[in-house]
Amino acid sequence: MTALYRTFLILCFAFLSVAATAQDLPSKFDPQRDAAKDIATATALAKSQGKRVLVDVGGEWCRWCHILDRFLAAQTEIKVVLDSRYVTVKVNWSPENKNEAVLSRWPKIKGYPHLFVLDSDGKLLHSQDTGTLEAGDSYDAAKVLAFLKQFG
Image (cartoon, rainbow, N blue to C red):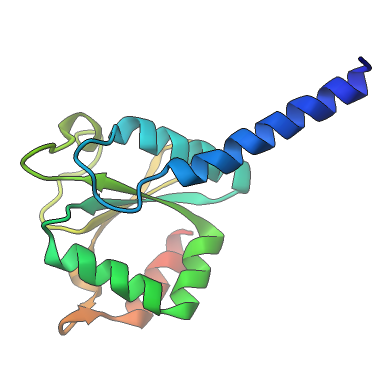
């Protein structure tokens, strides 16, 4: 086997392992998930794609968490910025699993959902109280877009 062919195979396997990790990230808040592992996966994926990590902390019990999910999915411009600049990972906070070991690394959360922005090395860049992004019974598109663009 030539060195060039061996290098090609290594790159192919590396690409496939990174591609598979995006599917491994939670799409819902799950108290059974290993938050530290999920954040490590998101960070590795962000590093390989030149993106930031958006850590979305909340729970399935949280009304505003569901409002934020629906809002982000429905806003085309926001979705484009989010997908092009961030790897998003959900971290559960609930009575079943408060993920204290992971969340103790960052500033105290006062309400949910809460967003943390990490660089591709996992360093905290920003802690965002989503209450400041609200508008009535939803979120303000201009504020959310400005937040995502500022840190992404």
